[in-house]
Image (cartoon, rainbow, N blue to C red; front, top):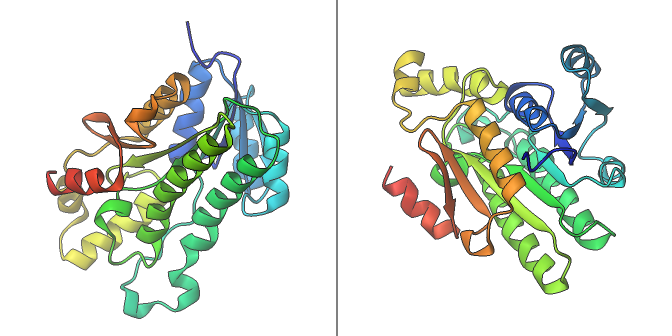
Length: 261
């Protein structure tokens, strides 16, 4: 039996890249999927390819969009959207560019978290953020991106503690794709820049990324954690690598994982 059959799942940023892979995996589970995105053409193309998908054109950094999302009474909300990171060393960035991902990725995560904790959201709802391996190992030519993605880990932990204290019955999770992925907006933008930064070819740079995962690996991980509600002792942060899904209880153990890669 498919655990997500008939469940309402919102995928924010589900019209392309990893988000689209997640949508396809959810449809395989016969979930009722709503995709939120800003680009009307991408949403139109999505419906043409996957006609059972519902769509909402909206900006997820707008509080009104968050309210609309939760008014749909979703069982699962997946934040797969985020701004492309800057691709220059820190000294070459101004503050506005450096902080791009704080004003998008973190703001969207915060708005979702705040609404879920302060408004009537049904018990059992899962809110899941897609972070990045940069949250653990850093990313010296991506401005504030690594810090923003690390904040998503903290937010999931803070929100879970608040839900537990308030007896709300909510589940907050973060998935950490371990490596950059080609055929995603972030991977396609960052891989060439990092190769140039390190003075190697793109193929050599990609070959150095051990334990690399695919978009489909991430999508499978989303389905797994969304359908099985991991036990509290497994924590709120999960690494997705070429070796599968690894639960880590806290940031310190994540750092140990990075050191043993």
